[in-house]
Length: 152
Image (cartoon, rainbow, N blue to C red; front, side, top):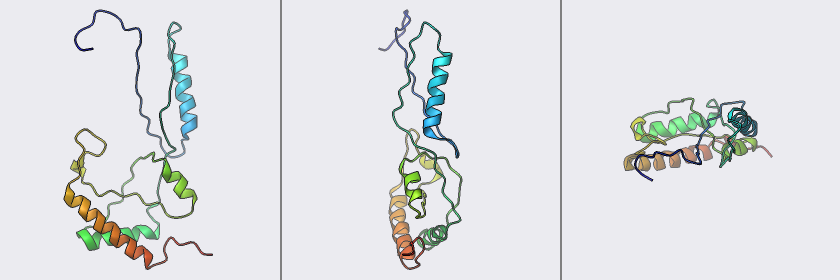
């Protein structure tokens, strides 16, 4: 509860969020973290680790021809092209999609002051509607090129 306490609690918990980088594997990092907790916990402490969710790290290749089409769609719709930026991510579906052979494209429609994944995260409606138009145009461009199609 609230207020000052004069007793030592019987139990303590901690939540930890990990961001993996390329070439790390989720299961290996989970084992390493659990082993470190056990190794560092005092003998009189019963320590346990529970993993709630996670995914292997993902990277995308911005050199794929589909990215040129995405850039073109942004330029046509909002008058500005894309800005390739290396950003971390552990999105569970991305590695699985990448194994299928089709290009995986990750892009945002927000602005720097939108505070992505932070308190008071926002997205202006104009960005949302522009994003819908950008992706509509991207799919039109993609459908007309054969980029990303597998040969039979």
